[in-house]
Image (tube, rainbow, N blue to C red):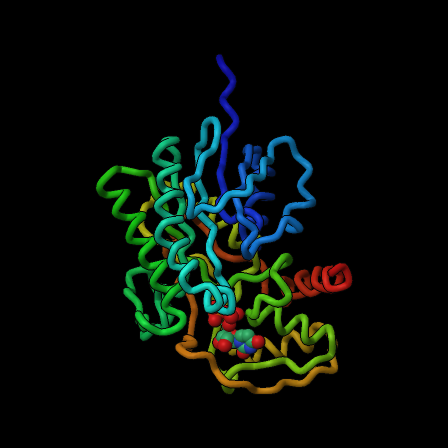
Length: 317
Ligand code: UDP
C-alpha cells in the first residue's frame, strides 16, 4: 500500500497572533505548513521559534495574486487587520483584505481543490440586540461607522465564502472568532488584554473606556486553535461561533489583571470609542453539539500564562 501523502495547510496571516499559534498546532499534527503574511500587522518574531523542515514562510500580500507551489489540502484564511486601532488606521486596506484578499484566498483553494476556512468575527453581530449571540442572529452593524470597515469587510467575506460554496461547490467553513487572547499579542495593538497587562506590569494607569460596564468574553488562544481545527476537519459549511462564554465587564477584567500581576496601578476612565459594542458573549451550543468543543482554560490561568509571556517580551523589545 502506498504511504498517504503528508497533508499541506496554507495559512494566510501566519505571522499574526492567531496564525502563528495555528502554525504551531498544525505542525504538531504532522502537516506541512505554508505560512503567508505581508507583515503589515504580523511579525516574524511570532514564527522565529519554529525550526522545522515542514514549515515554509512566504512574504505575500494576499490582496495581490497568491501563488503556491505543489499540492494544498487546506487553506486557513486568517489574514486581516483585526484590532480596532489597526483597522481604524487602515480603513481602505481592511476593506480590500476582506474583499480582494478573501477572493484570492478562495481562488487558491479552488485552484488546488483544497478545503477553505474563513476566519470571521463576532463583530459581524455589531452591537448585538440579542444576548448571548447565536449563529442565526443577523447582527446590528452601523454600516457607515468607523468600525464598519472591519465589520462589513468580514460580513462581505462571509457572503463571498457562501456564494463560492453555493455556486461553485467550494468546500468551505466559516468560524466567528470572539475575543481571544494569549502570548504573542502585540503590547501596543490597543486591545484591552495586552494594553491592561502592559500598563499593569509598568505600574501605569489602566485605561478603561466608558464606565467599564461593557462586557466581553475572553478565550485563551489554545482553546480557539483546537476549535478552528475541529471545524476544518468537519463537514459543516455554515458559520460556527468559537469563543469562551465566560463573560466579564471590562472593569472586572482590569481589576483581575491588577490582582494577578500584583500591580500598584489604578484605573482611569476614558471616552468610549464610537459604536463600541455594549455586550458580547458567544452561544457555543452549536460547536459543543457538532464538534464536542468547548474552552477548557479558565481566565485566571490563561491570563497568568499571557502575563508571564509579556514579562519576558517587554524586556526583549
Ligand atoms: N478597552 C478599554 N481600554 C483599552 C482598550 C479597550 O476599556 O485600553 C475596551 C474597549 O472599549 C472594548 C473592550 O475593552 O469595550 C474590548 O476591546 P478590544 O479592543 O480588546 O476588543 P473589541 O472591542 O474588538 O471586542
